[in-house]
Length: 399
Image 1 (tube, rainbow, N blue to C red):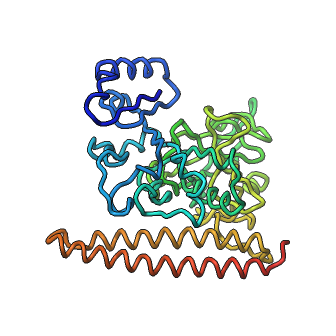
Image 2 (cartoon, one colour):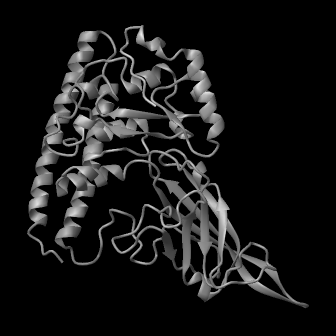
């Protein structure tokens, strides 16, 4: 629902505050599962935990340095800051739509980023913690191949990004009861560490799963074994901020070669479509991220595995492959490097700004000017290296 106001103080009364509260209450009552959003923060909506939707993304999202040095209070994020709602993304969805007139250039070299009304898309995503973004041009327009590829790389930085970063195997013993006979089988406890590499959480309940041959469907030692049973542990959605992690311990796992010889870790949510599973952000071109597969040691002693990527094909995204490098692989590796280099470049500028004196104003301006100068020199060098690297990649065979 859109209602335009012009800031005159007159059109704002088109929807009185009391009526806005009624609308928010009605929506909150009607939608008990689906996340809701408003264009800007509103007291009643924030009380109910509504998220936010910036439909002029990268055009009027950030002001100040990101907007060519122009301060504009009515922009999206300044309003979020004035409302003290900057941490809403930890529990409520942030999304939006790239401003329509920016859609055809925002992922091209023609885009004049960091000028007024042309903000850096990546910076806007990082600041707002966006989970999704609408861009009709990429689907209904005529985008170029490189433009689409840039959009995919940048889009992958939005929302959640989970990785299995450590696996611990600890020996345990439990009694397995089969009819009247009681036998003892060696079992292990497998502790999996999941780390958040993204900028926003998963906003619905999300379970971590473990499956292997001969696994029972529960942790009970008396449960019947199944060739394809999985164990589920809840709580992955509680891993919120980038760099946070949580350990999940699956108890009483059969310490057999058929089970530990191929252990599969996955993600499951009852709130997603069956053909659109939640994926891990790790794996190479041959893997789709739906599972992390590993070989675990038999329990001669407690083992700590620093990396779950024991099978060579299961490598984190961006990890160089030991296979012969092709043109496609070279270009992919270069894109990963280019994205990381620009992100580091932006971070250096931000840290430089933070080191500038706040007073007097003249000294602050001089300092920030030098920061911008250094940033531009470094960015230019990065762009040159990127172009040269792509030229070298194109000399390689296609396959």
